[in-house]
Amino acid sequence: MLNEDLKFKFTEILPAVLFEEGGEWLNVLVPPEELTPFVKQLRSAEGLGFDYLFCLTCIDWKTHFTMVYHFSSTQYRHNIVVKAKIDRNNPEIETVSDIWRTAEMLEREVYDLFGVIFLHHPDLRRLIMPDDWEGWPLRKDFEDPVNMIKL
Amino acid sequence: MIEEIGRTTEGDLIINIGPQHPATHGVLHLVITLNGETIKKVEPHLGYIHRSIEKMCESLSYRQFIYVTSRMDYLSSHINNHGCALCVEKGLQIEVPLRAQFIRVLMDELTRIASHELWWGAMAMDLGAFTPFFHAFRERETITDIMEKTCGARLTMNYIVPGGVMAELHPDFQKDVKRFIQLYKSKFEEYNELVTGNVIFQNRMKSVGVLSKKDAISYGCTGPVGRASGVFCDIRKLYPYDIYNKIEFEEITETEGDSFARYLVRLKEMQQSIRIIEQLLDNIPEGDFQAKTKAVLKLPKGEFYQRVETARGELGVYIVSEGGTTPYRIKFRSPGFSNLSALEHMVKGLKIGDLVAAMGSLDLVIPDIDR
Image 1: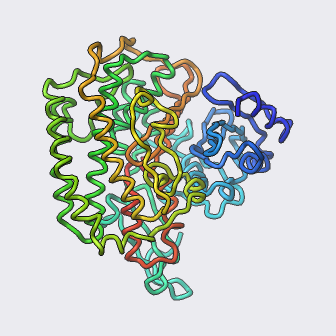
Image 2 (image 1 turned 45 degrees about the horizontal axis):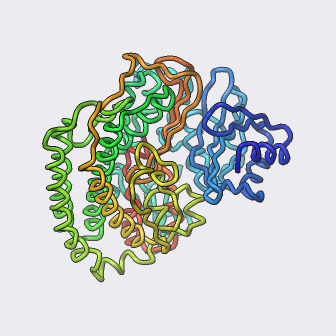
Image 3 (image 1 turned 90 degrees about the horizontal axis):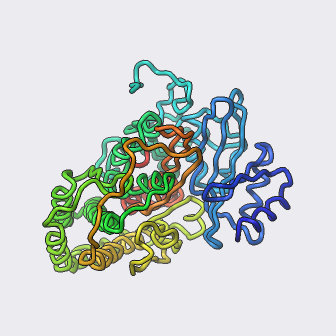
């Protein structure tokens, strides 16, 4: 499906979406509280079929976090990027692990490195860092005088 | 945190495999809950070789960070470098000379064969056959020698740079690769005679660790793992980069989705790689091996994503740039991470002996998962 058709379809599902163009794929900005109902539609709606979540990550913009989800459809071969801005002091967002199974581990990784709380996640624990680790290493203001070497 | 050893309240046994265990091929730590011999739960504990490559890359320039990525999936380091170089080139809109593209693809495919060779030997060794390991290393050694001559290193080659490749090919390259292809073709039947046709091997692999097509997509499984379940996910075909769209090769898929299907996919993929190398080897065009680029690379503000097909599946390089000389944020979508997440689903309800067969067929490289 072409970007114009996708845009039309997304606005139909959720009128509050914003679009960013210029990148390789269509960027869809979604309000964080609307994320779960929106992405559920992405997977199930006719003609969309985004069944493959190939990248899930977070970016620390110092003023806020942006959750980034890359979706692809194995049937129609179109790709999109869904983004949601969340509060940096109280980073919370609904999990998508019940829709895409791969998200369970990816969300644990984001929780581990950024401290984003995924609500209703089945098993939200540290994945890579030790269980007694303090702090969120991939945040821009993370300081660790022992383990971090600055160039 | 669960108790690391002992029994649960229901009387199930908890055992640890790894981080120091030959069957985990590295420092993977699995905590397994067993009811008798039946697996109830598998929980991977990661981080034993976490070097925080993503954080490191934030303070390295666009020329420097590529060298770190060789240490992620060290068995397909060329392809990691290739993905990063392509992503930087996409941002700077650099046109790569045709000769460099040929060299890159040749190196990628040689790496893929070397990686699958090592996996083939290790897979057989996991199931108790020691000899195939030496057979596999005999051929793999020839490839590492070729790499050493051209790139100066045998494992972490760091040969592909933004704009092309770092140096000219060694004068013996074509001769050596031809000798390797000849050797490989004469030995390939041995692989089938030794392992593929073996009844014990087949019985231990068939209908073990079955992954359906739907689950493979949901778990984000790519590479031979996805293709063995019938998912068409070869990035070289779907989103061709460099000269892959001009090369003839088949995308190997199977439908069974069990460990044996994954085994067959990798075995046939090696032959497709040979086919690609044969098409390119005598046709490398003359010209520059590197495009002219500025000494200091500055990516424009924006986001860039590049996918490449490594020996294990889809590697994604996601660069967020603020216009400076270093990336603002970089994320590597590693294939092994997603493939590992499907492990528990695959082995639940099987006997503990089958865990090793299923895990071996996933071809996990732990530094790629931990990053």
